[in-house]
Image (cartoon, rainbow, N blue to C red; front, top):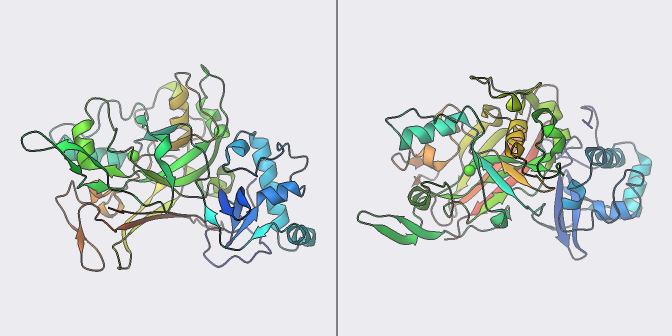
Length: 415
Ligand code: CA
């Protein structure tokens, strides 16, 4: 359900809030009563477990006890129809002027406005990381293969990706320990702490249930299996990565930590921000050809704050830059018959735009450590230093729609 632009809530929502009634992202929070699922609106959380127990979702098809859990996975395992019906009930309860909704929320203590801890929203079974920004792929190609074509022959034929480590996906705010590992030295391998700790600005999507093993998801049905989107920081140790990646690709240079934002924005909330996908030349193989090719207009920002210093915006770019759509990524990931399950995460790959201020990693911003970035406190960076805090935020804001946001995905290098 796309929520009408004119709709307002009886819950106070500040101007410019990421979470007006048109958004209603899902997450998992914890307080003295335990962990449960919730929806964010303004500065408060709708306690879905209490709302469910009080009967808000009767006749929606929701299975009993879905929201009194420490992950959204059970909810994600429901059909799109149930996702939509639940969103409809929450929207209705929160709509301004709905006296019954206000009375229900008060009677059952559904609105949580005391401090809570936000958890990882999903128990992630499988994690795929794509490489779907053409500018990012070109930048990396130019740096590491200066004499060849920056794009490898497969890049425009399929959404290149790899399977990452689901067990080290961590919620926003978790400190990042600088990884140790093997790296290339002048006369042989060295071992030590990474000196090229980097970020990758990405956006991910979370799936619901998929078909059984051996059954690909057709590209035009792929979005039926996508629940929503979140922000992703694919922390990367470039020196470990550079030495280990041949011939099987990323391994320990990536698997030490991947941060995601705590709120999953439903695809339904993103409907007003869907835009035509980038033109593709050459036309991909039939299984990747879409009837209706759509990206999402998401403005992405990355701030870097050294210890004790104010933030400097180091990256500002747009998700519209992506060459491959989410539907193509999911169709490709399942074309061999591989399954997707509720709570799987598919990350976009580094989102880079055409100008240097839009490059989505420090690798590109510093051109592999050859150019300094100057921060607002006068200090310089090529890669991250201990104590640096990275904050990714994102907004959708186009004419005629109420703007929404993704909250934040944050992490501090703990050394
Ligand atoms: Ca990545």
